Structure formats: C-alpha cells, structure tokens
Image (cartoon, rainbow, N blue to C red; front, side, top):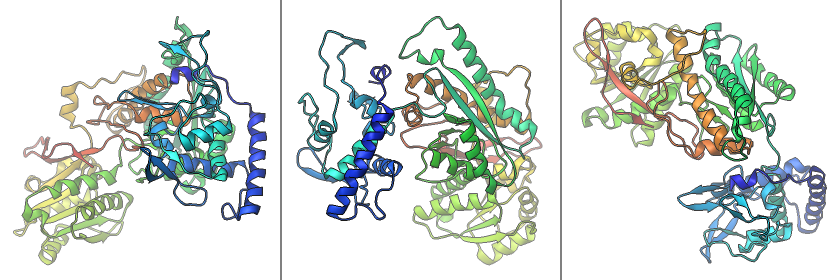
Length: 560
C-alpha cells in the first residue's frame, strides 16, 4: 500500500482552505441551531484539526465524550477501545501485519481513485478499484462500512455512530492527515537536527556527533553515486541529508524560546541524538507540542510518561534501575521480600529518580510503602549512620541511593554484627568508585547495571565502525557507543518509509521494527507501536573478591 501512495497527488491547499471555511460556517450554524458545539466554540481551523486528531487517535468526541461504534454487526463499543490510529496508525498510512492489510486513511489517498495494480505495477487499462472518496461517500464508509464502489468492508471495521457535526470534524482531519510532507523534508532531502547544551564538554559533544555526522556524510556520498532509482524500496538511495546543530545556552528555563527560534529559522524533520548535562524535559515538551520526532538523546533523566509520543529514549535512565531493583527484590526469598525495606536517598536528581522508580514499582506489586530517609545535598553519610539505621528500623533490605560516598560508608557498615540481608546501590551513581567497594561489603551489596557487562560486549564482538580522525576513551567512549544506536535505526527507518516523509510515519515505521540485539552497550533494544523506551531491562550484579574484581550477574535481564 505504501508503494502505491508514493506517486499520488496532494490535495490543493486552496481547496482545503475553502473547505475549512465552509466547515466553520457549518459548525457555527449548527451550534446556533443545536446548542454549543464545545465550550468556547470553534475558533479556527487549527482548533478543528486538534479536535479531529483527538477523535482519530484517542476516540474522543469534541464534546469530551467517547465515540461510539458497532463491530461484528451489532456489538456496541466505545471508540476509545477501537481508535482509528490503532489499526491505520498515527500517520494514516496503514499497515500489513499477520497477512491482514489495513488500508491508508490519509487525505492524499482517500480523495484519489485507488488504481488497479498487478504485482505493484499499475494496470492502466483497468478501471479503478474504487473511485475517489467524497465527503458524502467517506461518511457512508465510516457509518456503514461501504466504499464508493459499493464494496462492504469486513465486520472488524467499526461502524462509527457520528452525527453530522462530529463527522465533519473527523473528515476535515482525515483530509489533512499525511497530505503534505512534514517540515524539514522534501521528496529528495531531509534536514535532521541535534540538540546540545553549551555546558556539555567538547569531548562529549564530539563523541555524540561523531557517528551522526559520519552517517550524514556517507548518505550524501551514496546519493551521488547510486546507479539505480526506484520509487519504492530504493527511494532512500537518492535522499540527501543535512544536519542542523541547535546549541542551547543559559539555564533550562530559557531553552524553550531558543528551540522555537531554531525551529522557525531552520525547521527539521527529526532530531537525532542530542546531549545535555541535565534533564531532557524542556526538549521533550518542545518536541511533543511541535510534533517533532527525537531519537535516542543522551540523558539519564528522560521524561518518564505513559502519554509521550515523539521522543524515543534508549531507556528510562536512573528511574529504570530503581524499577529493576524492585522487580528483583520481589523475586527474592520471602524473608527478604516480606521484611522491612528502607530507602536512603540523596536529595539529588539521581537519588530522586532511583527512589521514584523503586517505590512506584514496589507499590504496584502490592507491597507496603518503604520507609525513606532523605539526605540533603552535602549531608554526610557514614557507617555509623547506617548502623544506627539498622539498629532502629531493622530493615531486611536497604536501598542506598547515593553516590561515591556510599562506598566509604559501606566499608564501615560491613563490620557491623547486625547486617541487612541485602543492600542495593546503582552503578551509574557510584561511577568509577564502584570497583573500590570493600570486599566484605561485596557479599551483601547488589548493584543495578543497565548495560551489557564489559566482558559480554567483548565476547559478542559488537561492531562499531571507526570514525576517521576520532578516538574516544572512558566516559566519552560510552557517549559515542550510546549515540551509535541511532545510526542503524535511522538507516532502516528512512529505507522503510519509501518516500512517505511524514513525521508520524517515521515513528510508525520504528514501532513496527524488529528488535536490535547487537546494539553497543545494551543487551537488547526492542520496539513496538507506542513504545517510547527501547532498552527495557537491567542486570543485578555483584563484585567478585580480589584486587581486580569483575561484575557477575545475579539475575537475568530484569524487564521493567
């Protein structure tokens, strides 16, 4: 179906504008005759499109009530359970899954005749498989399941119970859906962007950019020498790319205005990579409101949400380590799982994220809320403090969400006669001090580790192509490895889009991809419709004894 779409004409902007004006007059007249349409009324075409989008994606009417539909002939259901987007995808370009074809519902396709094809070659002498839809025949399809050629759709297609006003709003949205290529894209070029805050070190910035810049340069060389041109699978061979670097200055509360200015002057189709030293939320919110996809930014503080769509993170960061600790503890011995759990939390972004991930998951599993002791930034943590905590609370498990200072405290704590069964720490928060953990403390200390173990990465020989003239070590090498995961994702996505360069299609294609099990650092990156966190697991490890300790797995890949 996507192959068929590539050659179709776009609706006239003038025609859409005139249609919108007519619809506004219709809604206004209907509102006066039948009461207010929505609180505040309809003000402009953008308002209509927002209402139509909500109908299409969420199954919610402009009134705020759920849409109603009938399936299987006579079973009445709410549209929230059978949304248009759930089958036809956000982009409206449809899908083929399990041998079931879900046809496109975007304006570019609906309002053109559907031509006859034989093995993807147009049969010019044959009559169209169906005429172009009109507003009236599209309303008939949505209500009764009959297309303009008189063909009845399968009974799995909901028949929506919509009055004329609501039907008009939905049809207006369908006419706009994936009808023109998204900003930053043409038939032959795409502008990508990447976001960098000015406080990121030059070494980390260059490590993040290395593979993205190489990808753009290599792609443009390929576009110039490819001897083939096909409208479908090899469409991306002739695609040229450019990369805009959006540098954010000053405090995060000023970033939004800077992002909007960049987007006005140099609109991008999608953001690739990106790096800040703090939270990604200002960029996340900007992408959500402007419908700009963002792939795999380097951040340990992503927005953890069930409703976001446009930013795809590699993981939930520190929050995910807390989740994994809760799941691991839930499967531990009953004496540990059923005993008192105490969290000692440094009041920092890292500590709060770890604590939030643990507590939310622990409560969802039916356990009592853990006792929490907050340590102010700069407040000392000692072995005596932990001994006093153990004597008073007598916890079976301590979640020690603190940085390198925890290593020194655990050394003194390990000499106590009254020890908890388990102490959890986070590898990312401890940093390089992790390997300085006292030998006796290693016996009861469990460590969250959200990456492949170093020795596993060497055994599996995960291949990362070198960037000429670039050499990185330590944490900068980790940044480069994390960014590299963007490259195979971009390569596959641009190929599978087959020239349909719409932002929602970009994310729809990613949602239908197979897992990536050879990504640097991560054991597995998995995708699915609507999923926003690609790495969904974490190891729980311990350190071996001896002067050169190594990490050993105490769990499988704990899935959140």
